[in-house]
Length: 208
View 1 (cartoon, rainbow, N blue to C red):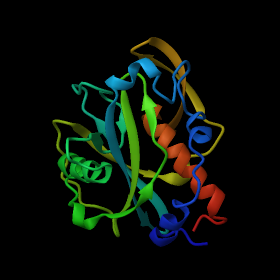
View 2 (spheres, helix red, strand yellow):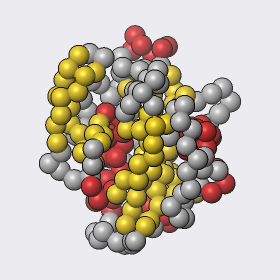
View 3 (tube, one colour):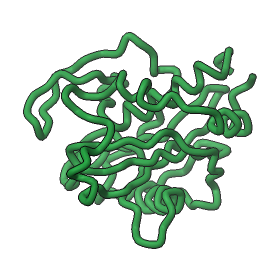
View 4 (tube, rainbow, N blue to C red):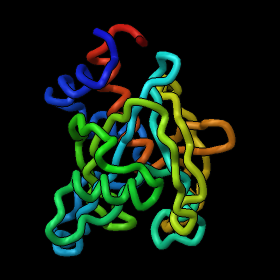
């Protein structure tokens, strides 16, 4: 089966690997579900995994968050943010993508969703949305929120994964990660990429 947006949409309708994939990139001593006592403090959010093909290779649009951001400053992330009152997860992901990197919602085809999970340090419940754009986007970066855009080839997600010592809110800890050039992808973004990579490997026999 060829990797294109129609076929990706079809396989996203199947049962997803979820926590099995997330745990591959989960930092030590972190949880995937919010403890019962914190349920009222959860902030619902969504992010967009935006895909396109270039030279027959599947790419994802990542961002590096500005160093002064309140949450996850300087980290490699996906466009997204808190779901505002009256919004759906898809509407939030599209709005934040436009605000952060300037891609108009009407240019994006929504393919489906990946498994949601809880990020303990920021108390966000993240719903990853998968979108498609026909060609490499023209970015209009909001430098108040985004330091730069990173075009990431999804074939780079393959075990064995690296480990790197990172300074986190809980102190220094060794975390699983994906190295790409000078950048380190870890935490929630790596967990989302790991699940999507597993979806691809389980459903597509070729790298087309």
